[in-house]
Structures are given as C-alpha cells and as structure tokens.
Amino acid sequence: MSTRWPAIFIFGFSLLLTSPLVSAQQTVVDVEGHSWWQHAVFYELYPRSFADSNNDGIGDLNGITSKLDYLKNLGVDAIWITPCFPSPQVDFGYDISDYENIDPMYGTLQDFDRLVAEGRKRGIRILLDFVVNHTSDQHKWFLDSKSSRTSAHRDWYIWRDGKGVSQPPNNWASSFGLSAWKRDPATGQYYYHYFYPEQPDLNWRNPAVKQAMFDVTRFWYKRGVAGFRLDAVDSLFEDPKLTDNPVVAGTDSFGRPNMDEKYNQKLPEVHDVLRALRKVADEHGAVLIGETYTSTIDELKQYYGEHSSELQMPMDMMFATVDKLSVPEFRKQIAAIDSAGGWPVLLIGNHDMARSYNRYGDGVHNDAIAKLMAALYLTLRGTPILYYGEETSMENNDPKSKEEVLDPISKLGWPLEKGRDGERTPMQWSADVNAGFSKAKPWLPVPASARTHNVESELKDPGSVLSFYKRLLLLRHSEKSLLDGEYVPLNESNPSVLSYLRRYKDEAVLVVLNMAGSAQKIDLDLFPQGLAAAKMTTLLTDMAGVLQDPSKGIALEPFAVYIARLTK
Ligand code: GLC
Ligand code: CA
Image (cartoon, rainbow, N blue to C red; front, top):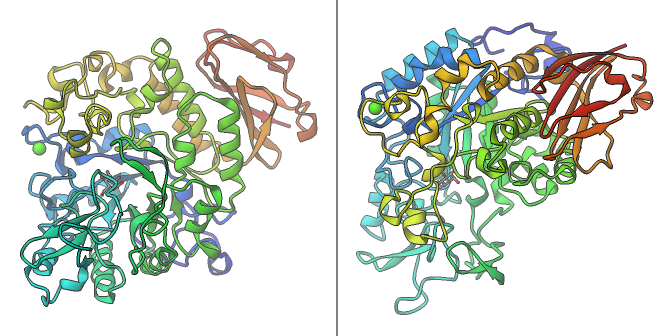
C-alpha cells in the first residue's frame, strides 16, 4: 500500500486485492472501492503560461509552487503539467531532448522536488506529461541515430529508403502539415515523424526503446510524481510494411486531401505497450491519463483495457469536442461514456483546442454559458480535468497576423490554421499590467478582457465565473451523490434543457441545465425514481430569484443552472 499519501479512510485490504479495478498500490477512498483519482479534480497547467516567478516573461516551476494555495482553495487535487523538460521548444516542450531533467527556463530538479513537497503538504498531487511517441531531433538518442547507418541508436527511430529520387517511402502525412518523412542527407535515408520534422518518432518495436522509456517513468515515480498524461498514444506504432494510407473525401486544415490513417494510427500493438506501462505504474500506485482521440466509444473502451489493465483515465475527446450547446448531442455523448464500463474522464478544453469560452459562448452571454458548461462537466460521473484559466473564463486570443504567430502549425497553415497560441496565453491573475502574470512582456499577449476576467477581481465577486467554479467544486467534494452516484437521465425528449440525477442510494443530486437562450419551464416526473415525494433543497443556481416550490415545476432563465439535493 502506498504510504506516500494519507488515505482519507482505508478499507479492508481484502477489498483492495479482490477488486479488479484498483491495483493493490492504489489508496482506496470509499466503500465502493474507488481510488483517489476517481474523487479528484485534475487541473491541466501549461507551465510557460501559469506564473512567472523570475520575470522573464515565461512561466516556471517556482511560479506554479507559489500558486498552490490558489489551486487548493479552488478545489484542485492533482495537477498535470505539460512538458517542462529540456527542449528546443519547437513544439513548446513536446519535443523533449532530455526526459530526466527540467528545462532551465522552468527551473531545476530541486525546484521540481520542492513543488512535489509543497503539493503534498496541501494534498495536491503532481503529474507530468510523458511524450512517448517521439523525442526532439536534438535528443542524444536521435543525434547518435542519425550519425550513421550503423550507429548504436540507428534502430531507435524509423529509418527507411525513399521510393526513388526525392520520393518519400510512402504517402503518410504529418499531422502538422506536409509529408511525415524527412530525408537526412548524411545517410541518405528518410526518418519518420508524425508531428514536426524536429520530432522524430521512436521505434517502439525495438525492446531497447521500451526499456529506456519505462525507466524514464521510474525516474519520476521515485521523485514522487503521482502519474503521467501520455501524449499522442494513438501514434505509437506504424505498419512495418509501410502500406500507403487510403485517400478519402475532403481536405484538412492545411488543404491536403484527407486520409484514412489506418496504417499509422491506433495499431493494436499500442495496447501491449499501455499494459506494460500500466504494470510499472501499478508498482508505484500511479495513474495514467491518455490523450486518446477516439471516434467511437468502442475505440475508447479499448484504452481502458480488459479488466482495467491499460489506462485508468483515457480522455473522452468526443465529449470534449461536442462544440455546440446541443442538448441531444450532450445527452448522447454522456450516455455513451457512462455505459462504457470504465471511469469517465471529462474535459471541455486543453492546450490544443480553442478555449471553451469561445467554442460555446454566443458572444453575449459568455459568462452565463461558461457557468453552464462548468455545471455540466463538474456534476457528471467521472473525473474532470480543468484547463488552467477556464475557471476565470479566459478567452482565446488568436494571433492577428501571420507575423504574430508562434505555433509552427499556424506558420505553415495561416490563415486557414490559426494554430494554438490563442488558448495558451498567460493566466490572468489580476487587472495589473500583463494580467499580473509577469513584470516582463509575456511570451504570448494577454487579451484586453484580462482587466475584468482575472483571479483577483473574480474572487471578490460572488457572481463571477470563478466563484461559481469554487462553489461547484465544493459540492463535488462534499455530496456523496456527486462523487459516487449513478447517472440517471431525466426528461429525455426535451431539446433545450438537459436534466439528470446523480443518484446515490436514497438520495440524489438533481442537475437542470438550460442550454437555450430563452426562458424554459420544465416539469420533472420523479415518480419512476421513487423520489416523487422527496424533499428538494437548492444547492446552487445562478438565477436571481429563489424557486418557490420546485416540485411544481422549474422556471429557468436563459442558460440557467439549477442544482438541488433530493432526500427521501
Ligand atoms: C499532443 C499534444 C500537442 C503536441 C503533440 C505532439 O497532441 O497535446 O500539444 O503538439 O502531441 O507532441
Ligand atoms: Ca520565468
């Protein structure tokens, strides 16, 4: 049993050993046998943009440590830090040149240890981002690999002869534009890179690669990390015969013909690696989150693995990208993930997609809609991952011209492809210069809305999005129904109002969300749930008026949230 974290309460060891869902190393936190991460609120944090302690315009680890009290106060239990390892920063850290160190721009290993220790004092666990698919082209493994056809690390990457003069080995395309192959003049062969040319793919068919990468996880487990978010797992393996991908209808955001990437994405071998990584994680009581871009729930199910032998937390990107306030669409996605048999992992934004504030906002009621979206994903069954700044309703701040662009995707694809700079801007701490993030000019510009949408102002305003998040997260941690209750959809034919219960034994939490821009009235029939005579106590609403008698129907203002406790 892990002794690194105090258990809230620990149940019989026999339960631990018999439950197929938790490893013997996982701290169990309730009678249902849930592990800590199933009751935790996760927070994704982009280190370049969170807090800058040394005023060089770039966030750093000491900056993060200085904000742990803020995170604690918000209701966060675990943070996932996107890559902070040494890197040439071509892909802003997703091109790692040393997996076992901290990039000097973010601090030192000692700063990291202090972050872990300070987190532990506050009950906040630290997770790192593990880029498994590729390294930087400046990593010593790749430098050796490209040095000659017979070098010790040659087979650590995927090298092939071209088809003819200036012809890459096949038609595979890089997800970041152009071909996925780059010719290296020194040895005359091509290497494969699913992302930028500066991110050569590792050859996971080579056992030495596997060993070295597994050792990386052990290095960080020993330093106290609680787990990893695994980057781009879909891309780990490629067809060794290099079969061309079929071209299909339509074009992508670079204007290239679409392809069915059946020969270089989601190959079955991915699951062998995930099972093996999970075994190492289990030895350390750690949790694995997956960046799993699946298009069906069956595909997502595979990432949990049989008897939960792969990722504990594969992200449901189908829920994350609904992209419109559509009640039927959300109902469908929730039902799908809820019945998938694993523990749902829900998010509405990350460092690769435009901020939820813009994707769901209508331009007029954006704050109300931000509360509505929060009430949705923070009351469903599963573990939520907040994206930094979502709680202060940060908006996207896209580059205004090609000259301003930093993300290479957009340098290549402008103006069709705006890139990801917009969702990675500095955390808005106050109305001060540079949003209180840094005294120096930040690496990305702060939008004008930082004057009103920032931590300092929103903490003072009980009606702010941040105050709403805090109240929601408090409820999430204290209402048994919200932690463990089953999801029971209500009024399933209503196209404008999404209503459901989180039912736990004799009690339930009722959630009613008006996704329409017009007032709505709903009547709830709780008779089938045996709750017709239940007492209804309002827990949280953003509506001005107090409901007189909710059992007589609920009148909802546009985009309103109504959450109540039902007790028999
Ligand atoms: C993942 C990351 C993204 C990165 C890519 C390549 O998709 O989330 O930010 O650019 O992998 O590492
Ligand atoms: Ca700094």
